[in-house]
Figure 1: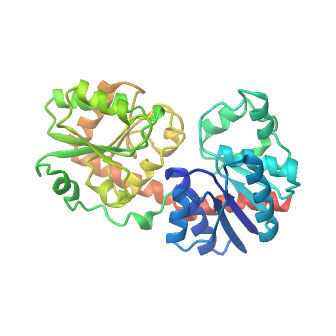
Figure 2 (figure 1 turned 180 degrees about the vertical axis):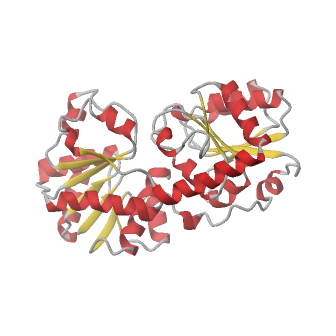
Figure 3 (figure 1 turned 90 degrees about the vertical axis):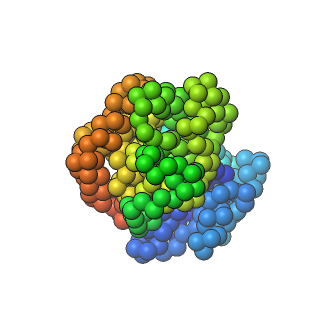
Length: 365
């Protein structure tokens, strides 16, 4: 198989990391003959692909029709067998390439969001475009929301998310964040690693922090990420009087060093497709308290690999955080179970094998 992975996303989040992981897995296991990533020049994934010396080609996406024509030329030059599409705008461009420029190779779409796509005629049409042979989803809730738009439900399948255990090699604390932020050593650090978007529900996270502070929990709190809701979140920090308790660390490339420093990963997302950061916490043996929402129940087993709290309920979250902090035996059991669960279900090797099987089905048909 000669594979093109196509995205026009310019940010760096879980899905973009997934593209890189899949590329590496397909390459390292000799699953395919050759592959390239097609993406915009000013994208984060282009920079990462260059750093890792992966095959990557840039595409100008200012005009969708021009980009569609360029995509057709790239596919012809590469003699590709399959186009693997990774975001909505790339989906649109791919369909336009098929309709207007006779791009005939089969297409697979990777879907990661719990969002209705039957909101207008064009969106429904592009999801039912005949060239899209399979829509590969990360969790069941993503499948369920697509069923409103996709007529042929046999096109829908679930493969899951993945993480690289080898990237997260240590679970030992080094004191990195205590030193960087000048936090006293006897303080716990509770954190969240997530983009500042509406469904990550940082409002509940901050109300949980306020509750823990009012209970005199000896801790400081860190937020890693950036996004369109940052100004709103910073405003809430001031309103709750948490200026001296919450640290904004911005976008970081050293998550494998930050995660082990957290005494609890507090993840309050209210409509999470999967929660890849939970798997990274497992890899670092960091305890997790997460919301019972979206696809999280597929990656977190309550009271086995982590603790779950009710969506939007900051009291429930605070209770669960205190339980984890105060029960050493529970914390050890959760983290060991989490690591084992990750090894068995969500490594690059496990998910890469499932993914290539799905893509091969398209080629065989």
